[in-house]
Image (cartoon, rainbow, N blue to C red; front, side, top):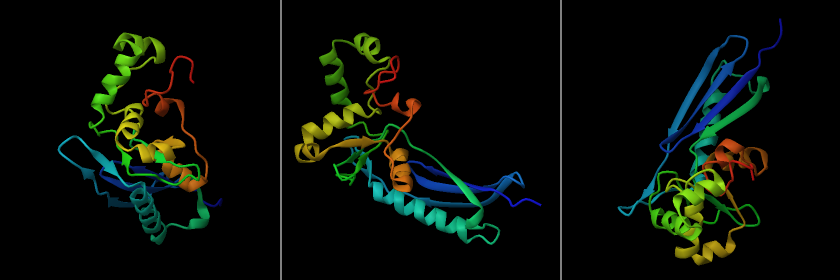
Amino acid sequence: MSEDQLFIGIDSGTQGTKGVVFSREEGRILAEAYTDHQLIENIGGRREQEPGWWIEACSTVIGQLLKKSNVSRDMICAIGVSGQQHGMVPLDVRGEVIRPAKLWCDTETSPQCDQITARIGSPEKVIELIGNSVAAGFTASKILWVKQHEPQSYDRLALVLLPHDYINYWLTGEKKTEFGDASGTAYFDVKSRT
């Protein structure tokens, strides 16, 4: 009889982090765990979270999953991460978080969307250039917002990751994203994939 292969799935959403352990041999979920997140918000549309909260939540959830009696950490062969998109996790040159992440649901950056679109010429021109619009939920306007409202933070900015990409960075040490997620940033050309 072959040894089972177990897979951990993590979903870090706006309201919380949930995790599961899936057994390949049994074809079912063996364990589940959940912890919720706080939200930094104001009436002006601010919606932010500290990326450290996500790491604490992931650590808690993974710890809870591994404590289940039917889960052996030696049989875990992969971890898959999904999560909220479009947020902005600003990092300095050392890979340290500069400020709280502005989330996909942050609308405080709507004026910056209009500014970017006007600078390019029109909504149609933006779509022609990058194959997408500059929406308030997307990442590009959040970078401009930081430049305009927190110049000290902007001066330290070296790299931006999406929220679940930041969790993958914590897990692997690699700073990467994929095309589908990058398409929701408004700084990625979906036609040329650059």
